[in-house]
Every structure is written in C-alpha cells, then in structure tokens.
Length: 328
Image (cartoon, rainbow, N blue to C red; front, side, top):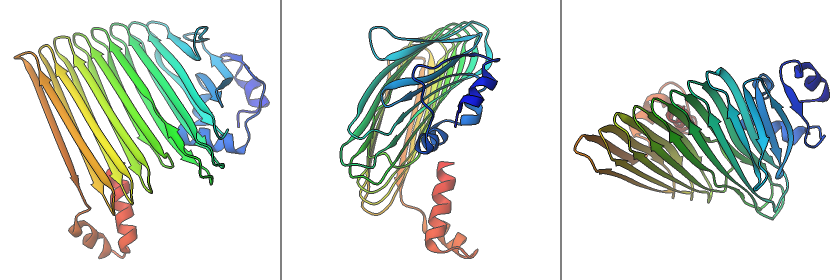
C-alpha cells in the first residue's frame, strides 16, 4: 500500500499530487501488484487511476504529468536526454457496471530513454459488466527510446464481465525506437487489442504479446504498422494459449512503403474446444521492402508430455510446465 507515511518519504524525490485523498485497500493493492510493481512505482513518476478518477500522482524533475482539459486522461512529458527513468500509469477498477474511457498521450523528448509501465486490473464481484478502454498515443522525438510494458488482469466472483479494450498508437521520428511488451495474465472476459505504428527513417518497433484464455473468454489482437522511412523495421511476435471454449483472433497488417524490414509471427497452443484464427498480412509497396510472416497453431506435442511424465510429473503438471515455458 502507498500509505501516507510512504508518501512523506518519497516527497523528497518528486512532487506528489493527491487528486483524491484515499488510501488503497487490500483489493486495490492486489490489483496494482498484478499490473504494476508498487515498490518500483514510488521511485519515479506515476499516476494511479481508480474507478475512472485519478487518485494519486507523482512527477519528477524530468517527467511531468498533466491532466487533460478536453477529455478524460493525461499528458506525460519527458524532457530530452532523460535517461532510465520509470513512469507508472496503472488503472484499477473495483466498481461493477463502470465503463471507463481514458486518453493518455506520451511526449518523449529527443534522445530520452525511459521505461513506461501501464496496465489495468479489474475486480468484479457482481453481475454488471466492468470495462476499461484506454487509448495510449506515443510521440517519440529523434533518437528517443522507450520500453513500454502493458499488463491486463481480471478477477472476482461475480457474473459480470471484465472487459479491456486497449488501443496503442506509436509515432516514431528518425532514429527512435519503441519496445512494447503486452501481457494478458488471466481473468479477462473479453479484449480487443489494437496497435498502430507509423515509422520514419532508421526507426525500430518491436512488439511482443502473451495471451492466455479459458472458459468462454474472447481475445482479439490487431496490428497495423506502416514502414514509411528508409531502414525502418518492425518485429511483431504473438504467443498465446487458448483452452476450454475460448476464442482468439490474431490479425497483423504490415506495409513496407520504403526500404525496410519486417517480421511477423504468431504461435498458438490450442486445447479442448478452443478456436484460434491467425491472419498475417504483408504488403510491399517498395521493391526494397523485405517482409516476412509466420503463423503456427497446434496442440501440445505428445512426446513433450511423455518426456516430462517420465520425470515424475502427472499429465496435468506436464501440460502446465509446457504452457508456462511457452509463455515465459
């Protein structure tokens, strides 16, 4: 918990803005620990959003966070040449029936190098659906580098759905790069994840996603990357596990509009009555575009199970080990 005592201790390092004076309860802590490390959060800039409202914020000398005036959301400004600072912007929802929409824009200065941790955790114990839709837009100036980590998590005993629909837009100026890690941990009833990239000269956009679904859950991922600059590149990797009656869709569209390189791959393990659809699409609009796509969907190989079972594991334990290793 980020209690009042902890806030006093970190005020020396950054400016604290309490938008609503509320201590975090046990459920809040659980959600925040799943999507964002609380201990690391207090070392840099952060903004905590709960049930559609900002409740706590810290800025630093190099990172400023400003509340938007026209729509719900924040602007994050990182000064040029900022090196290795952490920025956390977690969202938690504990109110059943809430539909939350937020717009967060990241303005990353020249030659900055930062780590941004986002994500949403939903706790729903009731029958109404809870939903968070987050639109994150990244504007990287020349030479900037960002590592962006996004985690999604759901829990609760109610019949209400836990819905997450994140949209990520990435705009890279010459020489900049963004590495994105997207993880759907568990408990998310439905998600449509859209990621768009527009790349200029000598830029690199790397995306890695890991998804696991079970029950009647549904997950769809859509990538759309425009390689507009010479020597721009992208690598999109999706690893997923679909079990029981869940359904997953993977759509990847990459356009090579200049001399560029792209590699898209989707690997999925399927079990029970699950359904997985992969649609990788590449379009070369320039003779110097080098584009590759791969897709593989299948069940766990019998020899893998047999090998682990000879070491003393049950079939269920062997499956769990294989899946954990696959998603690691």
